Length: 217
Image (cartoon, rainbow, N blue to C red; front, side):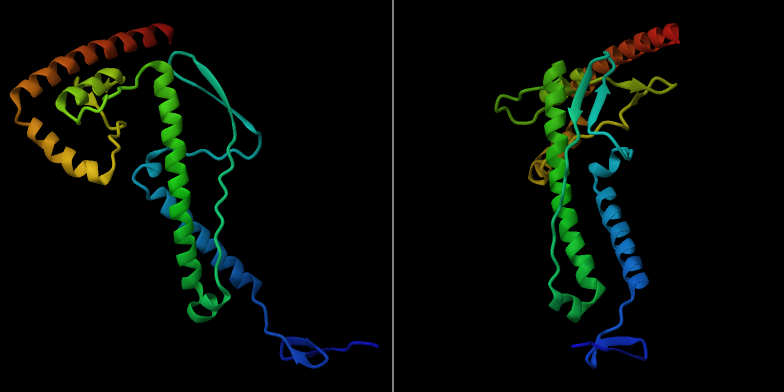
C-alpha cells in the first residue's frame, strides 16, 4: 500500500489529514527571550547577582587560591533544574505559561545556588579560622565587632573603610530584629568608640598589606 502526501496552503498531511503549520523561527525566538528572562531573574537576586560570573566551556576540575596562596581543587558540580509545562496551559495561556514555568524553575535554581554558596563559604571560613560561633548567643554588638575583627578590610585614599564588598546575610525574620538593633548602635557611644578603635587597627593592617604589595610589585 502506498501513502500519498497532500500539501495545501502550506499544510501537509497523510491520506488527506491536515497538520498544523510549524513556526521554528518564532519558537526559537520565544525560547531565546525566555532564557534571557531566566538569566535576568537569577542575576537580579540580591546575593547571587552580586557575584561576578565567568563562563567555562571545557574542563571538569577547578582550582582556586586565596591571599595566602592556599590552592584548593574541586570538581565541577552540575546543577540541573527540571520543569514541565502542561500542554493545556500552553493552549490556554500561550507564552505566559512558559514564562511562569521558568520563573518557578529560577526560584528552585536560586535555592540550590544559595545552598552551594553557603556550603562553600562555611568550608572556607572553617579552613582559615574566620568562623565565629555564637554558641547560642543572640546577635549583639560584641558578636558584630567580633565578625569584623575576623575579616580583611580595605580602605580608600582618604583612610575610610571600604566595606562595599561586605555582605551581612541573614534570614528575613532575623533581619527584622537585627536591623533596628544596629540602628541603635549608631547612637551608642561605647559601640562607636570600640568600632573606631577596631577600624584604626584594621587601617594599620591595610597599610602593612599595601606596603608589602608595593615591595613585591
